[in-house]
Length: 346
Image (cartoon, rainbow, N blue to C red; front, side, top):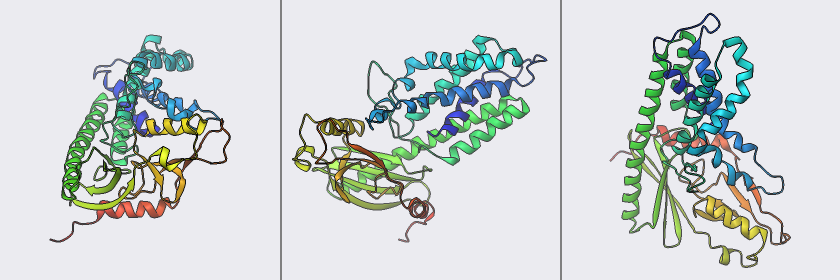
């Protein structure tokens, strides 16, 4: 998820471990604040893997983001590294023992991978033993209704030096994620019913929350060499927003000029693996490959990112990675109408 959310959840866990009877030394008057700050740093640290990139290989960051820094086995190492970096700054003023710094940073670090796994992007929890990207798809990568209450509880816990508010923050996070799981089950049932009404037997089907909420969900399923993309609002005033379809990528047929041993061909295979096979040609550009699972408006095909190939590229030349954020305000307006629009009259 976004760094702020990772930080506040990372802060809440070590805050909540202090206990109501935490004693304060004259040099450490606000232990809940200190635990929160260290947990926040630890909670955000795993995303420093974005610094692993290459100017010549635009897909390198896709390989390493949410990889080893997000694995369960790396949590103690990650917490220890963060503690090494921050302890020297804090220990003289706060009289903090090194093991305490390690503990708070590690608790914050531990929350990161689990929260990322709740999103749709996928996290390598079991690296290096298994490179599967696990994803529960129960919350958007940005969700203000999850983050703002949690952040307020963390801040109040620190200001009032009272761990009860940290407990309330963690309770809110669990309740909201539980609601996301419930919504996910309902969205999946709705998507399966829609496919059945069309006479389709999906080979695979995924649902994920749309941007910033758990009311409107995106559905993508594969059948007969095509992806069908729809949206549905679940819970409050339920409604289905039928979308569009697109042919599944067939690299050999769609790019007959692409040599199998070229760097572009290898990059295409990497992108297909990252996208779990949910790839298609962009209808607007026949040299561009998109991941059909991601779009701002959930029942549309306007991808958030893509790779673009060039027939004239050299054998060792990489594809071009692109992000697409055009007309974001107008697209958000269409999504917002889906969220608040009443159900049609029967």
